Length: 113
Length: 115
Image (cartoon, rainbow over all chains, first blue to last red; front, side, top):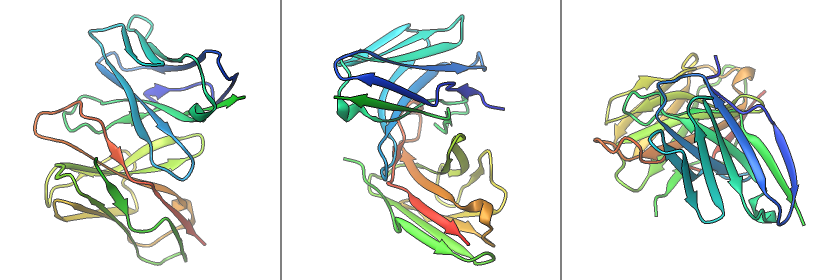
């Protein structure tokens, strides 16, 4: 059972525009969420996180929004750059305290010049 | 900067072989993890370890075992490789001991092909 879902396998945007990547979760006990970015032939790297006590967290061009009532979070990239082209995974710890994460299936973002 | 090193980038093994995937981290992290990444399935946790000689099953442990004899090293073992274990294997580490939301640091992965 997929506890964290990314329903869009791919997204294409033009350079300079906004990229919005979506993630839904089923477990209302999740209280912390992370986004990872993965380039081909590299491991995922941590991008940004948000705690359930917040509804927004911003870091430069990246903003994550959390809607707890809808069990939905989104990652906004503004402005998008070709170097942002990668696979993005949302993830959440199931709350066992050992930081193991449950990952979504990923969204491949392509930013074209 | 944290470095997680996986010993092989690419491996090709035959069905039935015993396979060892090695991972080393250099930041004295308590926790280490093995995930596999498959198209359409994302990253799935195989095993993790929160201390030397300690291990816990993840979501898909069948057909795998692990070993953590030293804090910096976490090995994934495929006892008898099968074609459905062809995948990208990712090792990760993170701080432990109460820093519950510290992010995972991943290695670059080992692409294993079982023929």
